[in-house]
Length: 222
Image (cartoon, rainbow, N blue to C red; front, side, top):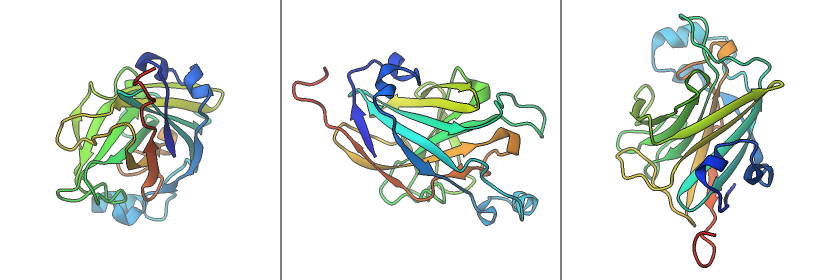
């Protein structure tokens, strides 16, 4: 997939219905449930053995950068808007973009020691902020920051349209560092709140998908 260049400000990119996104419909990405055997604790593995993990089967993904920030637009069918967290039986819808923060970082295992995976994570009950997450293996996820990643989500007529964005180059341990003209991998994860999905219980895109960032146009930003 290409992250196309557009001379748009971040405020415009955070609107999932803005003109830059209408010109970049993105592409469908198939999702699968995370295997119960890879859940980090025996209690979770036992609770989900034999149950369906991954209620969302596909998501449409587009990517745009403006030379300074990279934004992903995710769109998927969801008949219910789950935007609240109640006790232990009601969970919010959520989505994340994952990027390798080191060569050879495995997506399925959420990284490995010394090979972190960087996730940009949005939740429907935290609409005014997003989380910048890193992990070096299953069950090791930790939040680096709640200001660097920007996100917005709109649910309407049975579909979520979510944009998740961050500055291209962030000098922070565990963060992916990007630049125009570079190539990397990306992954997608979707949590269906009405299916009680949370933490490692989710639908995800499997191994890394290829992502190429358009180079800057001649003469710099336009």
